[in-house]
Image 1 (cartoon, rainbow, N blue to C red):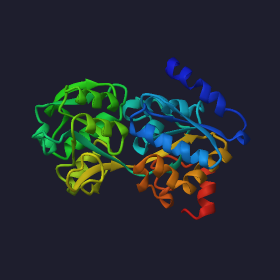
Image 2: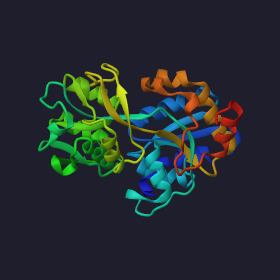
Image 3: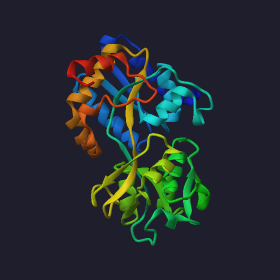
Length: 316
């Protein structure tokens, strides 16, 4: 664990390390402007409405804070399910570093992703990006390169087909786009940074997958195994100029094996009962369905506190 990151979490870690009856909890998120910061804020508001005393603690990306959650330094985190699964097994960028104490609390709404370009550009589809400067690198956010590769795969492309401009994170990538350093950037629909970029350049176009066939989905899953295709209607989000198909994948709130059962139970219950609070905080939560909270956790396990709540409300 990076010492600076650990220090940043220390105050929250001390707050959540007390007796379960205190009902305090911290939620680790990505940086402000990112999707997972928006999601974490919405979940915290729902938890507070349900009686937990909850605060969020931002870090650059889940691959930085996931080990801290695994070690019990903070109670909860928000990330996509594929990253949690990789973190448990030590696969991909984890380079064998396993995080075996991670436990899933609940599924959230799907994360839906796009490559964004200026609406007034000549770039109409993913293959039009060939030879042009595009964000790449994502040195502090390891999940993004395989997601970007998955998008390119739907057009029969690889990252080598564009001019790579290295950035640290999706937020930095959006900044590079707004500065004119790239023609596009990858980001999740609904994030605050996308709305900022949309206003800054006078309108975005959200490029969907170029091919929505089963073969294209299989090619995308070679890079991001939990990917699926999801249709959005024109006007559903900034940049969705016409009906199109995008890559989506599950996202979850997770905890660690030693988190008190009653705190995890309270979190699951608060989310189940306060879906409207989350939607009011972050509109993409309108797609959240409480009845889907007990989705497939992949190779992960649900925390017993969550399972107790799911059994009480009849989620099988």
